[in-house]
Image 1 (cartoon, rainbow, N blue to C red):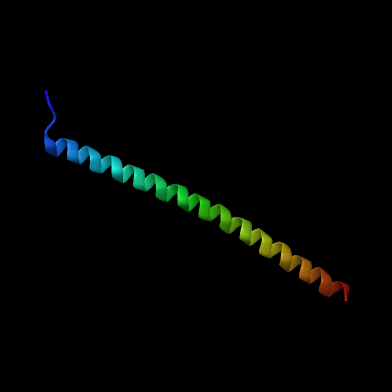
Image 2: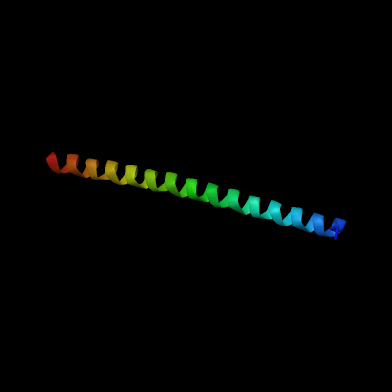
Length: 56
């Protein structure tokens, strides 16, 4: 049994949507990781400033 043009097109669109969703998840994970690193750096800098203020 051969596939119709419509079935092939639908399967291709589904595959493209899955790939797009996968890429979005990967980008979101990378952004979350970078954000967490930035928040930790800000917190460390803030604590360092507080410690310097207490020493004065």
